Length: 337
Image (cartoon, rainbow, N blue to C red; front, side, top):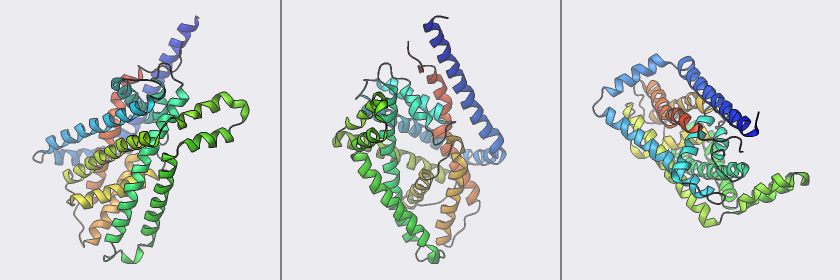
């Protein structure tokens, strides 16, 4: 078989395998692991509310804004090795979401994006994607650490006042991690030095790819971080809007504080993208129950409302893009001629 035909066949087989795995994992999670009857009843109940469809449409629009900002960030970062259009960057991000749907901690996203590059080295594309993710983690830790202290402080005069030491420890650790990630992110060229020392000299060709970490100035990294902050604000607002839609009556400032704590907890728990719903739901219930217990309130149906809001943010921000991203998987090239 000619080499070109062999490469084309291999690319096609891998694409089909990715699609099979993504649909399989999503189907298994939705139909075998979730209480679809309970979630469906809850969804039908809230869509009957006035303006519910319009609110869901706004959340969907924010989802597009969220991943568009991520596409702009990746386009901005990857230009150091290859100029890509926004359209191509957008396809790379969504194809990455499809591959990330069945990989631990969504690591498949890194490789999914890199495979859309036409000429640049794929490893360098992966390392650049990691740079963008590090900036996103910094935003999560920074806002989560601040929110954690505010949340624990707000509980001081409530029923949980005697058991806040763990909360302060968690918030303190998050703040220290944020400082560590801040230093690492804005001094990311350190990774070049570190890996080139750790990797044996006989792998010199591979070690050279870590030079990509020295390509960025402080100003460029700051610009990428601003993109990360925009994304953080967008998906935080999405979650808050969905909580209100699910009849969780919480003021904006307090709601965003709780949401930031949820995202902080999520960042510390390695999961498959498809299992995030269970973890997010459990964390949401815990924090919201603490919040309302502190107010001497216990709204009826709080747990089911928290699970429904968590399911919706998961489904809208990860599952819908992962399913749509299947279209863009066909634009990836795993082997080049």
